[in-house]
Length: 83
Image (cartoon, rainbow, N blue to C red; front, side, top):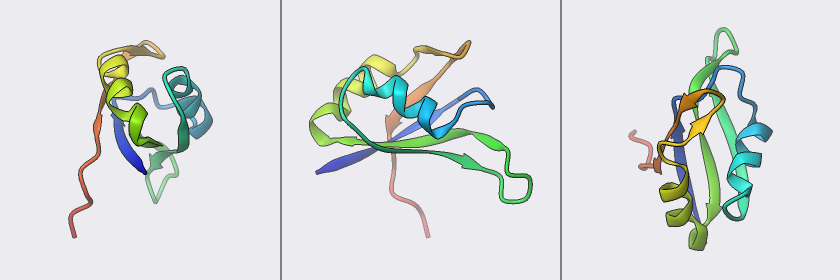
């Protein structure tokens, strides 16, 4: 099983691989994606990381409030998308 983590307050220059790399230090990362603006293609400053269920809680506690690229990031379990 896996869980998806929301990661907010990311630096605008963060790539999918940058995001995955920083989380890999704390467990198994299945995938990562930065959300971009549809019109401009620029980062919207947040993304999602899919991780092993067993590593999710540890990653949230280790990464939430940590410094990433000079910004204090917000990490929590993602809520299901509203229709």
